[in-house]
Amino acid sequence: MRAQIMQMTAVQSPLRLKMALRSTRFAIAVRPTTDCALKEMTETLTFLLISFFSLTVCGKPKFPVDQVQRILGGSVDAKGSFPWQAKMISHHNLTSGATLINERWLLTTAKNLFLGHTDDAKAEDIAPTLRLYVGKNQLVEVEKVVFHPDFSKVDIGLIKLKQKVPVGERVMPICLPSKDYAQVGRMGYVSGWGRNSNFSFTELLKYVMLPVADQDKCVIHYEKSTVPEKKEPKSPVGVQPILNEHTFCAGMSKYQEDTCYGDAGSAFAVHDTDDDTWYAAGILSFDKSCSVAEYGVYVKVPSILDWVQKTVADS
Image (cartoon, rainbow, N blue to C red):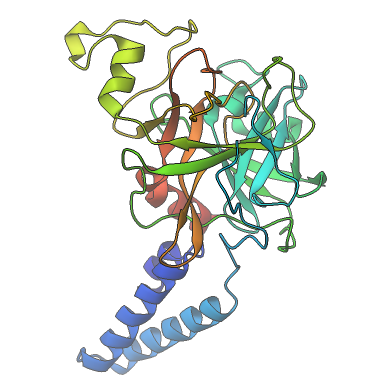
């Protein structure tokens, strides 16, 4: 039981910890049990209480985005509104994004991790080649990378750091959602160091607010049809995104601003006003739209949540 609870709470979700606490306390109160089982449940409850009170703060930036502002030509993040945003640089000096989800783990795309490597490169060979920065250009050391077991369809990987990063104003994880925030029309913010309107990489973190788009329209835009046998490649930028049940699409802003090369790995961050918390609804996978194609494509975080929790817990 304790092993299952540890896996459930591995990414330090406040909601999941509360649920685990309630279920464990209920089990102790009502379940007829042996002294041995009661001892185990009591130890589990103690573990959960310690975890709850030492919980890393997530999704609570000190200076959140407070207005609809206008990463292709987007606004500069001068306040530190996206403290979960990390910059990753490959051994060929290619820039991409990553998203801090707790003190030692980040999400990014599998494609980002393979940048500058052959398709058959191993995770243990890739990890030492990465340079990763959080906060105000703070270099952190990578211990290992882990690919999603089906990364050709689910474009996601995890990065584990050698040491915990100090959490504060400039560095803070984003929370992982227990529900799907990717409803059509929902607005989210995406930050990154990708290419700007001049197609050069920016030294300043920028962000843009984008709406979740209708999935069928996105599929038709890139694949001509939603009917499997009628699909064919038709991406306006010559590169096809991965589109399936694990993805959602976001359109351009009302100012026709968009994500672009180098922004992949960044979170589609949504603000839940009910608990005043920011959640990663998705991780940007297809960053090639650049205001030419109409949609960016994101991996749904709820689709990978079980894998993330298990991977973090097992490590």
